[in-house]
Image (tube, rainbow, N blue to C red; front, side, top):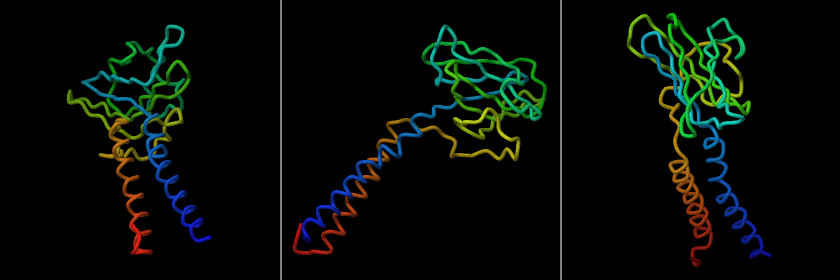
Amino acid sequence: MQNSRLLLRSGLTLAAAAALPAALAGPSAAASGISVSTTGSTVSVVTSACSQINGSWGSAALLTSSQANFAQGRQVTLSGTTVSQSAAWSAVSPGTYTVVVVCSSGSTAGSQTVIVSAAAAPTARSTARATATAAPSRGVAGGLGGAARDYGPLTLGVGAALVGAGVVATGWALRRRSKPYRL
């Protein structure tokens, strides 16, 4: 009876440790996001999240603070290759804008808030990555700071493996502590 309980506990621990890397890497690997930059009065966006369907990559929209959804913004068709797709807007007046990219499949690749200033210095501030909504509610645009970086699947996999190894080592140490005469 005691051995079967120990096997059950060990099996559950191993199952949780095996499922942990997949749970941690799943949502982050799917969200590839967008990159927005400004140069003077030109705003440009680059993504690699879209695939070509019926000759179209998708489109991007530049929204002002008073525009609530994708259809109201200045829309531009994405152009590019399977590696990278891009769009640009010129003669953009100074202000705060939200760039939203929607792929031809209908999925949102992401959105970012960007500030266009009268100076020629480029400024960009990330507020969201791979959002499900068409545009933010235009609340405080504080940004995510260093947390906005999109790590690749290799980095996430190594981190998940380290966490899994820690879970397994903790289980082994607790098991050994309860019965010191066993390995």
